Length: 401
Image 1 (spheres, rainbow, N blue to C red):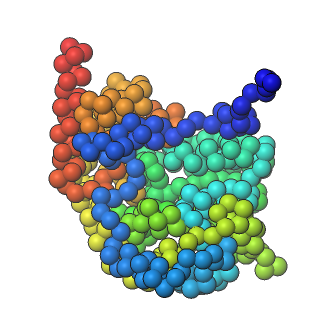
Image 2: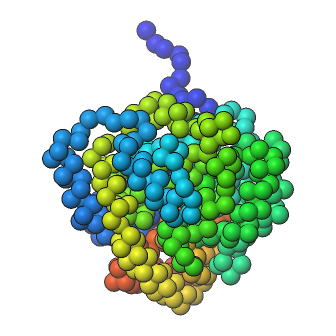
């Protein structure tokens, strides 16, 4: 018997665009001669003391389910860490542990966003922040940063104009992936006051807050100025600051209403129906990371600052490339003159030069013509990448002549 029904997902998923970063990486993964700078991860493994903590936890038999919200010691440790970082007293009951920062963001979106909701996103941005709301049926409004001579800036008045009374959620990532833009406290305060007046939720993707090259140990955050009752959710991850990308461990900070209510109970329900819980041995390693990891973060920041300056200087020597040192995160987002299809450019770089970079198009149409290079690597690897890029561009210019 023949079936006439098509094999297809619901419309929102059918229309979903796959990650263009993955489209490039999939063309080169497993090829030992390809230098991979496409993902946001370092060339260094997780610190030994964190790995040792996971091994000890496994030896202890920490292989069972935990609370949906995470083990109590980790929630308490995160409350102390986040509270100290942002000058506030934070109740562990406002913390939910998640299986990755990606999961944290999606849990927050699932808690707040439904079909037809208006969601404003500051772009260009990591595609999960725009595609997540679309998966949930929301209407996504992009407010683009401006770029002058490689430096990205926010027109805050344009953003406030887009944050209308019918807006449900603002999604904002700072320090920003891919541009490295960092919002300043005065603009944050203006946004917070505006959203307070209109009852708009702010979901802040704070994953790069410790990779900040300005003053202080942390980038400006809504947590620095928001009251516990403000509609502000902070999403974060162990991936970047502690070099734990493959561990898939994150967290959420929920507000607390005047009646004492938080979103934590609802986060717990969503975690149950998504992943149940993060693995206990990973959570135990995460606790050790936040308790003993400040020296790692300091060393990492110094290393990344040197790598950023080195790569930016080398890129700026190349004809047809506009690059500027970012204020935060771990990427140089540079423009290549004459490029109108960054995805094809990055695929060609893998094929012809063994160089793995991320296409600007992955982060939105406003980023077309740009390329993202993760600089969390040794100078030697960066120099080899520059040599490959230089040769590739020279061959293209020769062919075009």
